[in-house]
Image 1 (cartoon, helix red, strand yellow):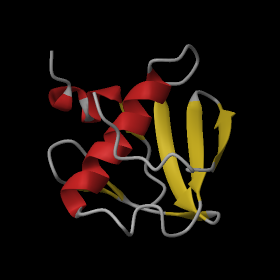
Image 2 (spheres, rainbow, N blue to C red):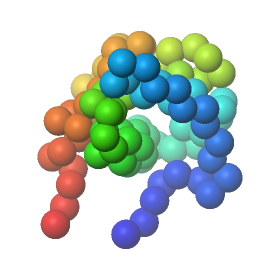
Image 3 (cartoon, helix red, strand yellow):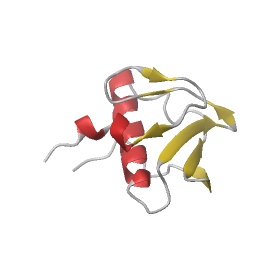
Image 4 (cartoon, one colour):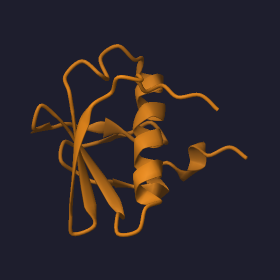
Length: 93
């Protein structure tokens, strides 16, 4: 198993009402291709939504909500939560 996330990744995670907001530092996703971004966002989303009390995830960069790619390739609008079901098709056994 490999990760597309850098080992020095720092993010602030705030959970409210079952939604985890991930505030990433700028530039983290910029170095990745669109396909790699989708897999990186999937990795974060699948990991967090497997935790008790977290059903959805939103993403921001430096406090500004961003849109993120879903598993099928479409983009969730900025501030729109994503969930396990948005990425489950990417899980390989």
